[in-house]
Length: 398
Image 1 (tube, helix red, strand yellow):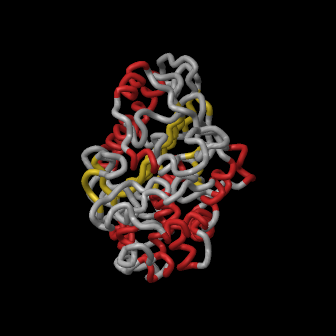
Image 2: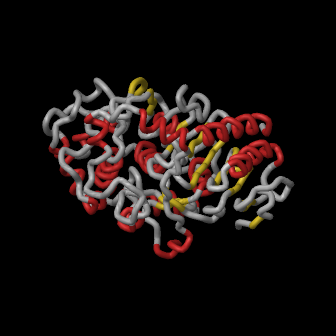
């Protein structure tokens, strides 16, 4: 599918971009401005690579990859973008009437009703309000792939009274989603995703990368800081004790090495934990989110189910990240710090800079994955600018 383009120009249309390679399929000319913007990022930084895929009402409008590390067909890790993909499974359970958001979690998971969690609702649990942003003890890496971590969370007391605050459950929200799916379906979240969502769409995004496509995997690469970025990072105050604990809650090193908690670790890559372990392409992400929109020929769930999940549940200062944040049910929602879409849009970013979302008001679905990891983490200025330009082009195309 990918076609190499002259290295002298990201799309063979003039200019000189040393050490930069681009791969591009045809794109709708109404999205040429988006393409030029992505090309400009590669031209300015020969070490920058990215995939970008844009659909409108399901139709492919733009498919590109730039830079030395990625082709359109590459698969790589996207950290917390995985949460939004796992949320697609939650949408199917809501749509089928199996999961009621205002029921106590213990309705579906009786062991959860311990240590002040008896009244915690599914809605609170899946919008980062339950006070369980970390496990009460350090989790072994292998516990992220079985039910041990869920058992720990079921027995512990919340760090805050549920509903009085919210804070990013960076790792634990995936564990909690997985256990709910097990209780309701008798299968793992990853199995439900594969059989009910990924395989029918033939989406290039996996929660558990098969060995058969391992040859397309491109490893996550560490952030490459400029001198100014390094100084700014060094000048920041240290993380508070809660944030530090949340991001050091496993026995694996917090790095991109083969022993860390990224998809570079084969255990993570093969098992696909619902919070951090997704591996795929921008093409796969845009295709998945397109299947959540009204009028999709093969919808993942009803538009009403996604409207319910896109309703704001948590807004304000995130107790863990100490920034303004906004969540629906599982999904991140647009807000002033992260204006990736219009009212009603939903999606998720990832620590490496990836972003995927859908906007039902325009029919836009968007997938973006950069390599290496981008500063300062999460959806960065490049992804947000590309999303803004994509929205403008979508309005022109309508």
